[in-house]
Length: 184
Image (cartoon, rainbow, N blue to C red):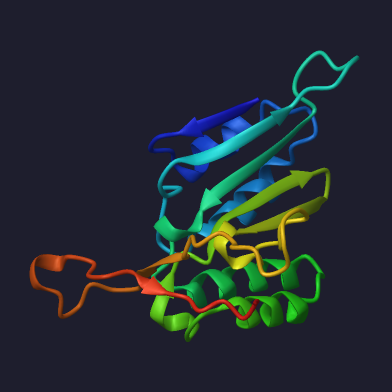
């Protein structure tokens, strides 16, 4: 069951995740705070909490909270650094994650947001799980299995948000960034 928080705080998200039998509140609080960034009590825009119910368990067994990083970070660099720091604190090598983000980025990480849409965090016992959800357009579009070779593929272009609105009259975000796909 998914619950969407319209304007939740880190403490409210932790309490909601605490409905799950296996949630470690102390570890959850540390993880959420690391992901939202220093000096923030809010959990950004529309955080989601998934409560997993299992047969034989009288209440939710596990909870995973998904934070919308585009509402919490100034840039993809901020998001990457927060996730990598949390990974390293948990003993997970962050090098492969950083390499993947760099490979998928259409421009320097400091220049935009929107690549890493959601980061999921789960605190179960004394261990954590993290998941990063990249926006759909970063994945290659598969060639149709039917039709002639070279058949037309999806023309959807990924949309990127600029990291700042500096120099834009009235604070408008201006035209979205476009990413050129490395895939044919």
